[in-house]
Length: 153
Image 1 (tube, helix red, strand yellow):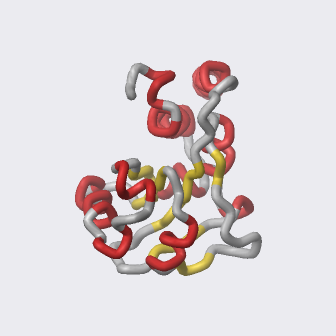
Image 2: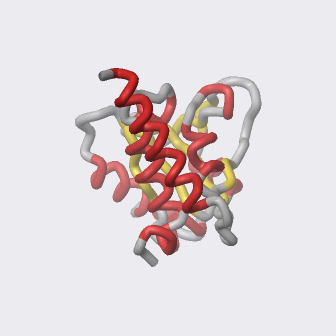
Image 3: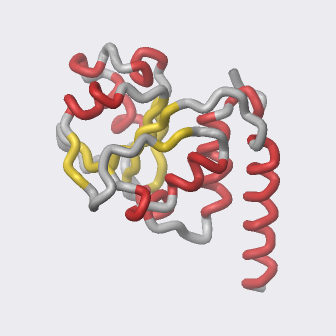
């Protein structure tokens, strides 16, 4: 049964990649990890899975550091000025509350992603380490980054 599940996951991911392959708009996407504090954490490509997901579905993963994860201040988010932000949170967290906290931060009001409301919450474990739900992460991120290709606007 595990082989079929892996095949199904791969088939779903490949279908999403095929759909987004020729995306014209490649928004800059910033990943931030939150633990409810004012500051956030940033993960470089070597420290997460979601960078590949973002790039596979037509986004550009914003790189702030190549070393290890770093603590990121509000000023770092302002300087990066991403088109879209993905916040990671552990399962069971209140996603809407986490998203609204970032969206309502007055210091971030001029950041493109905040002005347009382009903020998404993803499960930390799946986004950083990957899991058996990787195809769901692909689907959610693809709909967020390329909504016009998945029936959104």
